[in-house]
Image 1 (cartoon, rainbow, N blue to C red):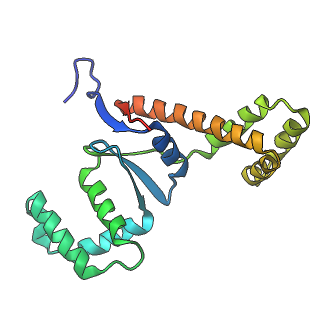
Image 2: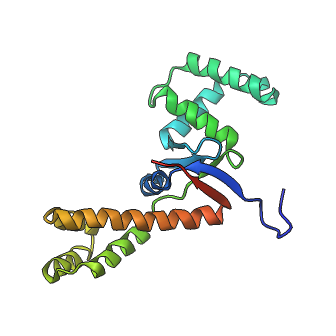
Image 3: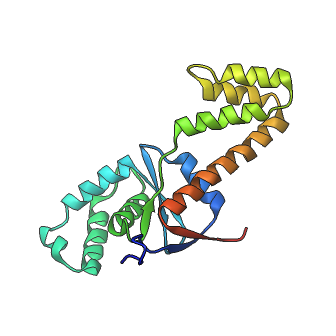
Length: 193
């Protein structure tokens, strides 16, 4: 269903912006993060869970896939109990199943962490440091391989600047999440606390 403007309808979701920003920072090629539009919860599904889910599916009878949604869920639970997950927790397989069943309707995949954007965050932060000596050390630290580790190591020596970095980084992640929410046509109804 589309609106008269040709855009998909705006969806609402109750969640915490800080949780979404943290999820953006943690999502990777190996661990995907999904926003549950109904509950505002963020589910994490690893590559291992996706692979193991496929193994569980292989144990399910073929006719399951033409059955009702509820019958499929019952068959999945039975197959999961018989399978006995090996590499991941059962809860993660249940989450992977839920995401797969509701992808694009109930669940929306968050983007992966962007190392280029994270690097630009460090560069922008260095420009805000008012202590010339620390600013030079941080500027040197972010050059070349191992920049993220060296940057953190340099900040470790200055607790006040390190805390300021955390706040700065959180705000930049929040800005990226706001952009993503707008692109996905999701209106965030911020939960308190």
